[in-house]
Image 1 (tube, one colour):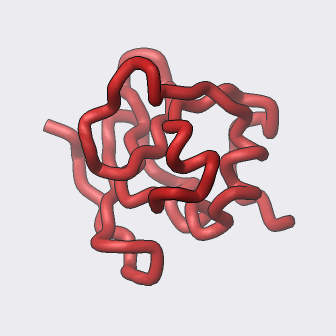
Image 2: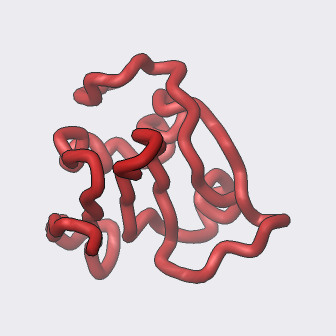
Image 3: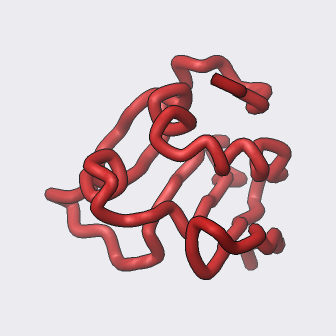
Length: 93
C-alpha cells in the first residue's frame, strides 16, 4: 500500500462509520489548523453516533486516493464531487 502522508501511520483521524463500511465516499478532507487533526468525511453533517476515529493507515487502506491530499496544509480543506473526481484544495476560511 502506498502511504504518502508525513504523519505517522498510527495517527488518529476522524471519519464516519459509513465511510469505514464503504457505504459512502470520502469527498471532503480537512486538516485542522488548531490541533493538526485530519477529518475524512462524506460531505454530510456527521451525527455523533456515526462519527469514528481510526488510524491514518486504516483510512488510506479504505481509500488510497486520499494520498493525493497528503500535502494539505494546516487550516486547509480539499473536496471533490465523487471518488473519481479531482481534488480541489482551498484555505478553510
